Image (cartoon, rainbow, N blue to C red):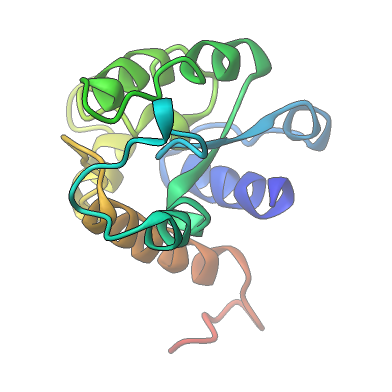
Length: 159
């Protein structure tokens, strides 16, 4: 999982005109589940019909990101789904050294009319809240990045 997310991170950086991250940096990161694996008091929002429905969303690629250990420890406390948990996580995601994680905060940008901002807008990588639809939307964005990351003869295999 870390390898795939690291490769996607480097594709985002390449599209944004930023330097890629090395293997040693990626290897030190942890996988963060945006929608928490263990919600506080096991209380789910009405969006989920049961714990299996919830788990189906939690373990999708669109619901995970790479993050530094210290930040992961901080965001693990934001698991009360009946609070502003995603907003709290977004604030912490801004502290990461990973662009794909920074982008989970809808306020994140670099400069004006930069390659990163164009990528963010063109891919609609903007999330104001986090739910099933957000996970599906991000999973589609990540799948597009996967096709950009792994090419055959410099061509996307989906084209």
